Length: 359
Ligand code: SF4
Ligand code: SF4
Image (tube, rainbow, N blue to C red; front, side):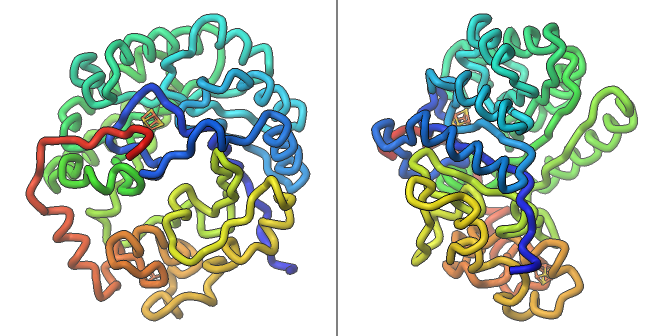
C-alpha cells in the first residue's frame, strides 16, 4: 500500500483502573478488568514496535497510568526506543517518589487534568476528596523540576464560570500549555450528556475568554481550545482522521483507530498479543474500514473538506444516528444536523452517573 500514512502517536491505555470517577471519562462503560491487562513484557514489545513503525510520540494514559507499578519501567522502555513520552494523568498518586522515578526513567512531559479551581466543586465532579490538592502539588513539582507541563481543563456547564480562574491558575503554576477542552461526548459522557452540556451562551462566552487570554499570554502560555462538536457547523478530524495519525492500544491489547472505536458494531479489532503493530496498522480490517475517502457517502463524497476533516467522527455518527457510516451530524451539511442541535438544547439534569468499574 504506497499511500499508507505513517502514524505519529501511540495512545497507550495502560489500564482502566482510576481512583477518580469523572462523569465525562472517555473510557468505555464496560471497563477492562485488571486481570485482562497486558503485562509489562507485552507493553515493552508494543513500544518497540511503535518506534520501528515511525511513531515519535507515546501518550501513557488510562484510566490512571500511575496505578501500574511498572509505569517507570514502561516509560524507560519508551525512552530507550526513542519515543517522546507524555504522561496523561489525574496526578492523584504522583508522589515525590513516583515523580522522581519517572523523571529518572526519561519522562519528557506531563499532562494533568483538572476539574476546576474550587477544591470542593472540583473534587465532587471527580468523585474523589483531596484530588485537587494532590494535582496542584504535583504540578508545582513538575515545573520546579524543569519538565514541560500541560494543564488539561475539562469544561462543562457546571465549571464554565471558573474559566478565567483556570487560565490564571495555569499561568501561576508555570504551565507551558493549557487545553481548554470542552467535554467530548464519548464513553461515560454520553449517559451524562444532559448534566454536562453547556448552554450556547456559555460556549460563546468561553470562546471570547480564550481569544482574549491568548492575546494576553502570547509567548508564555499556549492555550488550545477544543470545541464542543454540538455547537459546531463542521466536524473535527477525529484523531487526525481514521487510521491516519494515531493508534490506540486498549488495556487488553486491542488496537483501535480512536479510543471510542470499540463501540462500533460488527468490527473486529486485532490484538497486539497476536499481531505486530505494523501489520495491524497496514492491513487490519478495522483500520482500513474508514481510512481515506472511498467509504464516504454523500455529502462527504466529493466535498472540498473530505481530506480536511475526513468525514468527522464515526463513533458520534453511531451514538447519535445509530449508523457509523453516516455523515457526522456535527456537520451542517448532514441531513441529520438538527438532531445534534436538539441534543445540545435538551433540558439539563443535575445528577451524574459517576464512572466506575461494573458500569
Ligand atoms: S477522566 Fe477522570 S475517571 Fe477517567 S481516567 Fe481521567 S481521571 Fe480517571
Ligand atoms: S460533508 Fe462530510 S467532508 Fe464535508 S464538511 Fe461535512 S463532514 Fe466534512
